[in-house]
Length: 146
Image 1 (cartoon, rainbow, N blue to C red):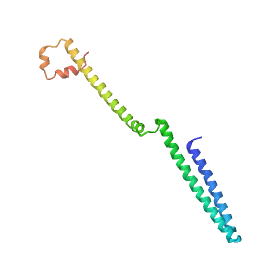
Image 2 (cartoon, one colour; image 1 turned 30 degrees about the vertical axis):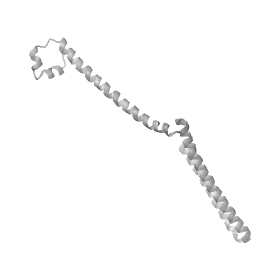
Image 3 (cartoon, rainbow, N blue to C red; image 1 turned 90 degrees about the horizontal axis):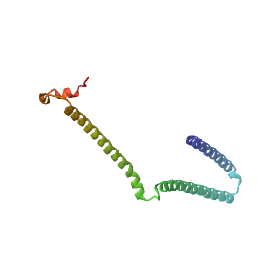
Image 4 (cartoon, one colour; image 1 turned 180 degrees about the vertical axis):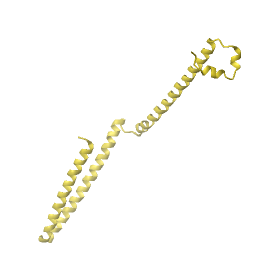
């Protein structure tokens, strides 16, 4: 079952519970005129206690959920010390920088090997000495040979 479907099912159950609670409260409120003031006061105090308990339970449940997430993160990172959290933030940056340095080094090696290829071709080929001083010599080197 997907997370979205689970959350919508949970929301549907909460909506049903809320509707039931409103109906129950309405029925209880209908008959408050027929009871004695002493019993009415005791019921009001009971309702207030129940509401306070419900609020405390929701707050405790939210705190448990937050601490559960924190504990899970701490367990994954190995104890939850701030040192591990800082290390976890720095490691991707170091990996990125190392990757950029490696790319730069590879590019430099490619340039050096291309220059070495040209030098080897010049040294191995029969080129007249005047060709080295010719301004079109670079174009000569760039053109492919048959």
